Length: 512
Image (spheres, rainbow, N blue to C red):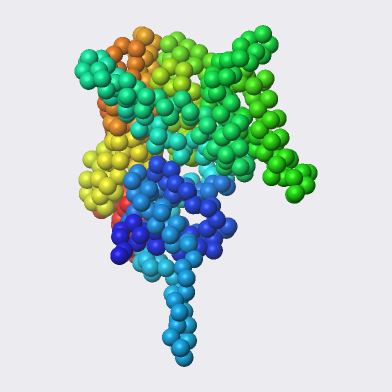
């Protein structure tokens, strides 16, 4: 029986070049990530026309289709099932074998809908393509691969973070004291072994054997390292944290590849794993753990200093720049920093500041909704994307509203800057606002909040930052962000020369 998710998967497949063009399939919180043989076979207009597709992001590493939280987790297995070769049915004697349909179900509907792609959607695609070409540098491509290491860990980080927040609340209230030790163990278990998961994913992303990456990374958290002395200093279990595990697994991957080039095939199964673990393990103990530990400490010190001494300015800059990072898909490269801060301090003080960018985006979208009151199609787009925006998922509003329109994207960044400056100002006063996990933002971040002045004060400061971001994003967009759109007229920019659908209507069909 077909479901909406299977129909969406079937419609996407022919528009990305069919099964033969798909090399890899993965997903993060909001995006279906495809490795393709030939990106030129992608029908971007057809993809944008599908109701479930909220946006597209292309880079040299993957082709990413934004479907939103929840939806992407259901569509991905349905998409993978379409790639699995199905056994051909046996034909009755004397009959010709049945031929397979030329296109997957939903392809015809996707092709028809492709003709409805609007000018705004095409403009957004051109902007993204241009930025992708300019940003396809080796460093940024490497950062995207680092992000791929940590993205699969986000669900566990969220779950454990929420449980940790609930446990802290119960402890503060002094209730259910018999349950809190169990909740502590549940919340802390994953974080205690996160280095192993980082090692597994690092080896997988960089082309090594995952279990070997996990093996060398496990050295970082092994209790026995307390007996190892380096330069007169005794190592501590967990020293270097996720950064040490990442470096160890990355080194192990290169050692493994080096071994496989010269070890005879008959000895490979014995020699390669042994040398990989031995050589990498020794380097990890006598160099990487110490160096990564120093780097981790420096990150914690720098974050605390930045927000305590230049909090308002730092918050303004971080809040303003985060939306462009999201648009380019580079925001995931910050995950190792967030994770390091959570390991050290119990929460990351950067995430609440960066979350203000989403607040500015929501405010900008509301201003577009209010000012373009006669453009029912664009207002429909905003109504569809706004709930996700309030919960911190910014891609639908970015790719469906602000980026294609142009100027509202800039005014949304202004709202994020204002909200970030608000939280940074209170950090200068000594009121730290942090998150016990990464992943959610917006309103969804409230269950994960933590700080040094109690939950009530922390939540109040964060709420004030959100309201500031909403207000400034709205005001900046209302007064300065819609000049071109308003000049198109109250009909939303109807193409009077052709009598066709208005650009806003076609944008709505393409982006929602």
